[in-house]
Length: 262
Ligand SMILES: [Zn+2]
Image 1 (cartoon, protein in one colour):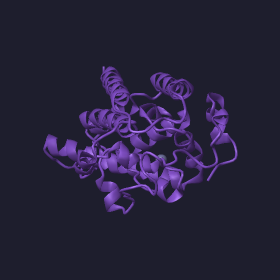
Image 2 (image 1 turned 30 degrees about the vertical axis):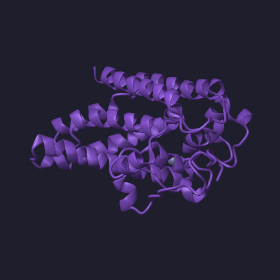
Image 3 (image 1 turned 135 degrees about the horizontal axis):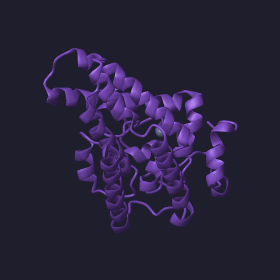
């Protein structure tokens, strides 16, 4: 049931964003959808199948297990449910911010994360373009935090839905009026903000790590408001991978095991 809720939410948000991209695109995509989409969606399908067959519900089950055994800080103190959920959501989101920073700074994790970053374009399918090993690592990382803080089980399901929805939204190639984008950024990560993180310019890639809310980047001084070049013109991807022939499905799967970029 928990998997069905997450899957329905993810597919619905993905459908809405793709339709929005079709109606109001932000940039002309440099690589045809027919080339990129089978690769990105192929990785998503493998990841989904792998999680279904292995540890797909591990985060939720960890929260239930932690509660039953009174493990984790929040299970040791008696807070109202609503406060418990809010604190769980905030800590998990901050943990994911740091996982993302770590994925850029730690060479071993960068080998996995570069699969996401070498996409030559930026749209809703980029949000699901992850190497299966990075998805597995992310799940174990989350489980460790859930046990440590004793995250609420309902908050964990909510967090997975929000994280997935926010990632699909902020990777979308959609046009949002500048004034609205500015207002939204007080709280949430917009596509114009996250696109900067996908720039080929290193100082821009090393910014805007947040997925859902903008406060972590502001607090940790990694927030960048605008790219060097315009949103329409800024180059996307990694300098070391510019040839789309090198970025086929098999090469992406093998990328972490080859010489690292950067
Ligand atoms: Zn990144």
